[in-house]
Amino acid sequence: MAASPTTVTTDQLVGVLRDTTVSLVRRDGPDLSARQLGVFLTCYLDDTGQTVRGLAANLHVSKPAITRALDRLGELDLARRKTDPADRRSVLVQRTPKGTNFLKDLRGMMAEAANDAGKAETAPAPVIRPAAKAAKPAKAAKAAPVKVAAKPVKAAAKPAKAKAKAAPAKKKAKG
Image (cartoon, rainbow, N blue to C red; front, top):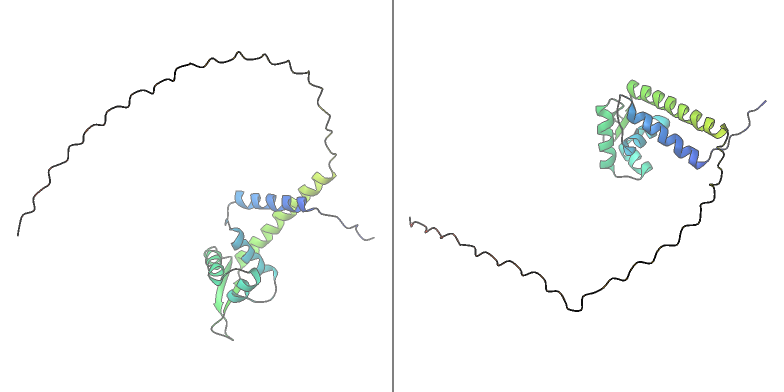
């Protein structure tokens, strides 16, 4: 018997993304930016070989932006670059064992977040009861009119400016 398809809402997907991101931030390990994570996932989830030029075109970002992301992924040993033997002008992006383990951990975090989202979906909805009617507010007392002085009030006198003494100019010695 085939399992019935599950409908996932965008709110649930955003919740899974949030929960996964929070898990990534809380754990001991690399903390990747959105761009670095995008480059990482593109390299690991797409079976075709990736190049810096190809990543830049696929992700619609500049080659220097891809290079900076790959620099960070290389520092963390999540990916490495190698010159393409078929075209020495091209740089290939390679997977690493540490990157493969990171992807495995990421999948686990996402699965847990998705399970939590599914549990929230099947949990009974909280009952929301309307608030009791509030008593009518008492009529506000009218404020007494404010009296305005007939004569304009003069502003306080400004303090006199202190005269600054100029320092005597030093004479240059002729040399």
